[in-house]
Image 1 (cartoon, rainbow, N blue to C red):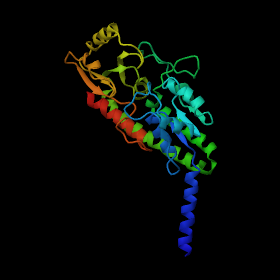
Image 2 (image 1 turned 180 degrees about the horizontal axis):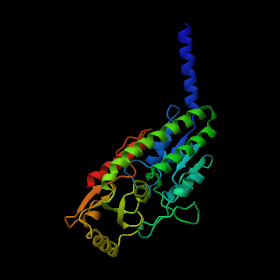
Image 3 (image 1 turned 135 degrees about the vertical axis):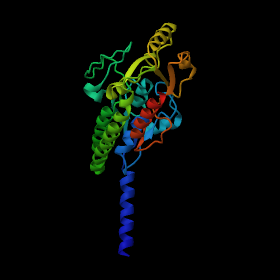
Image 4 (image 1 turned 180 degrees about the vertical axis):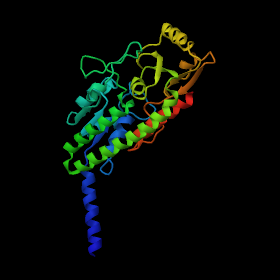
Length: 298
């Protein structure tokens, strides 16, 4: 009877602990993965932008609106990635804490570029400057975000504070191990040039010392231009072998026009990890998938 009573007591305690977990909302899958890692054993966050959908353009459904209205905290990259989310957070999730992660990346932030340059400068966040929002592609930034997520949740949910912090440290160790393995693998293509549909990979380029030579568009929202296409084709012709990457949500014909010569290989890279199951292992799997796709393109 004592064993049964203890089991029932433990079950009741677990139920109370689970119900006490804050309602957490995330914008994109990489952020959802990081938050899931921190919340392991406590609860699960909700995701606003579903897999396979561009984060730059999205309309909230009634179910997503309801989920947002029940939030205690919203973790998102920031308005430079999802400008459409700013007002819903202010109006629908007005009682929730809003944590924009991009400004918390500190000196590791990179500015948005109108033309690609290898002379990156490290800058502190300034709300009057525009910064490249694809910062999760830098494992060191993602590791910093784990700390921010853990401390935010620890404040909201002191009962599980130690668990959040332990999970964040474990997640950082996993990222560090993945980074070490991936760095070794990507060292084989450091000198090989690659281009992309739009300029979203400078964080990846910097951290892994890759050779990015240009893009069709400066950003996802920028218009395509015949001049830009001609300039990129000329750049590609200067190399004996080059990889051109597109993303799953974009028609492949947009980059196939660049492959009229035998030196160009086409590949697909997905910075949002649309084919990766959501959960605490998402982020390290995303890094691994991106690395494999880069290598396979060559």
